[in-house]
Image 1 (cartoon, rainbow, N blue to C red):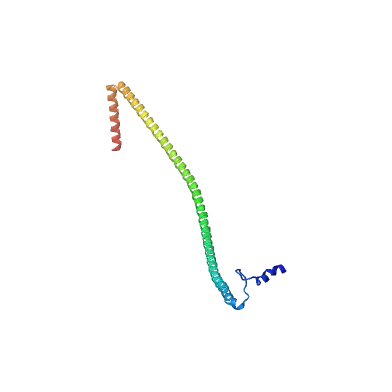
Image 2: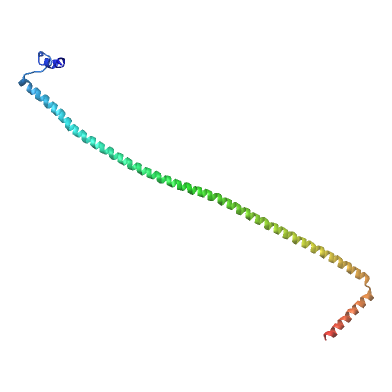
Length: 189
């Protein structure tokens, strides 16, 4: 311990010939001591006031930071809410798109079935028209054949009658017919 206090004790015994040291004369050192004490008080007093200003600045900065954090949290909350709303709308739109897709596919299938049904009905009608046309043409052909056969038979019969009938036979057929008309007239009168 002696070694620690020796430098402080020896400071009072240093000679004043151009070296730095402590002056133990109270009257001579009083203005110097007062100026040092005042300087230290002013310096640290400013520090105290500066610490008050620094404390105020730090408090203001802290309040601004807290306010910014609160605003950021509010913005974050709003952004999260908007995100949730957007995700809900996205899910809703995806459901609607799936429904449209499914409805579109079912509508396509329904249209396909309708087209197939209408085409089969059209084909059936065309088949009926074809059958009716064939039947009509067959009837027409049969009627034409009948007419030709009848005409040929008639011509053959007329030819036979003309070749078989002579004037005498012809006159006898006419007189028989006149007799029949006369008889019919008497009956009706």
